[in-house]
Each structure stands twice: as structure tokens, then as C-alpha cells.
Image (cartoon, rainbow, N blue to C red; front, side, top):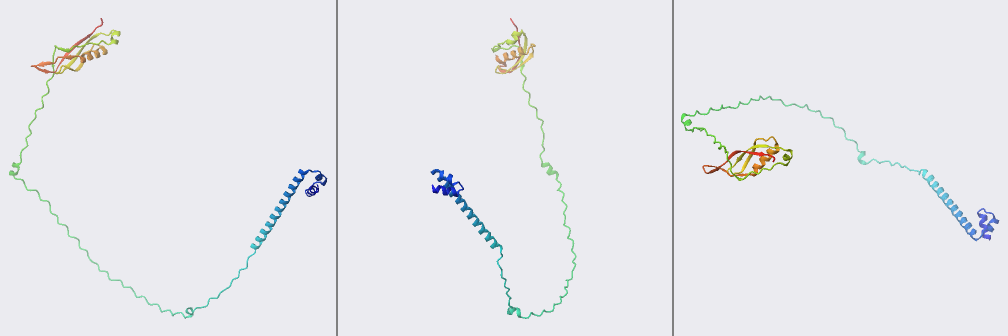
Length: 238
């Protein structure tokens, strides 16, 4: 109880009220007193450090006296010797320029030029030894014989006409004459329209039909030869 009253008096608390505090309140007051003491000691330590720093600064600001001692240099024996007398200046001799001798340069002699000699004249005997070149006219190669036109043709595979379906629906009819070139093997190598039917589809169908056929070759003196013939194809609707 007395300890609680003393702590209450130190912390500025009414002693009567401190006496009424319990055991728990006494512990809190004791911790508060210790904290106040620690804070006060820290303030005192900080003030002491500040005072020491100020003293150090003042001591550093005061200049330390500097003593300067002048040392007189003694003259050495070499320096005590008298200076040598200056010699009189020598007069410069005038510089003589060597005489200039002019030499005349001789012009180079012109180079000797020999004009080219004309070639020796060729004699008649030398010209006679050169062989004469004679150009002989060449005959152009003869043109190959033109295929003969035949009127009768024999078929190894007859012509089969395929009527175009669109031409059949549209009712296109007509007669097509084709010119066919048959080689020595009986093959139709060239087929063109000689007379048109008026319808391109019918003309194309006639050419295709002749290309699918095979002919017996035309023979001349027992030798197969190329020939051409005119074949008429008719397109009619039944």
C-alpha cells in the first residue's frame, strides 16, 4: 500500500486515489515511472553529447600558432670566386658568295626518222601463182511433191458421226465438207472445214468424226503416198 502511494505521489496522482488502486494498478504505475526515468536519462545523455560537440568545434576554430624560421643560406666557396672577364666580341667576317658560272645548254639533236619503204612490186609471175576462185551457181533443192487429190477413198475404220445433243435439241441440221490429208499410213493428219454447215457445233463434230477414222493409204506405182480428199458429211434429224 505504501509503495502504491509513493508511486502515485511521484507520477502526480492523488495519494488517496493511489491507495485505492489494486495490485494491477500498482504494476502499471511502476512501469510508467520506469519509462519516465528512462526518457529523462536519454535527454540528459543527448544534452551531454551536444555540449561535447560544441566544445570540439570551438577548439577546432581556434587557429594553432604556426612558427616560421628563416634560414640564411651561406655562400659556398664556388660562389665567392670572382666572375670571369667577358671576352671582346669577335668581328664577323663578310661572307663571300661564289661566282656564278652560266652554262649554255645545247639543244638535243633531232631523232633520225626513216620513212617506210613501199613494198616491192609483185611480178606477173607471182600473181599467176595465186589460184583463181570460181563461184559455181548452186541449184536450189527441189520442192517436195504436193499430195495428189483423190476422189475415191477406202476406209480401214469408217467414219462415225456423233450428233451434238444441243444441236439435236435446237434442231440444227446441215451439210459439212471437210478437206482431209491422208499420209502414207492412212492416218488423217490434217482436217479442215472446206464448206461450213452454218453451225459451229456441227462443223466441230464433223472434224472430230474424220479424225477418229482410219483410211487405206493411196498408192502410186505400188508405193504408198500421201493424198488429200474432200469428204461430205450430212447432219439430219429423223
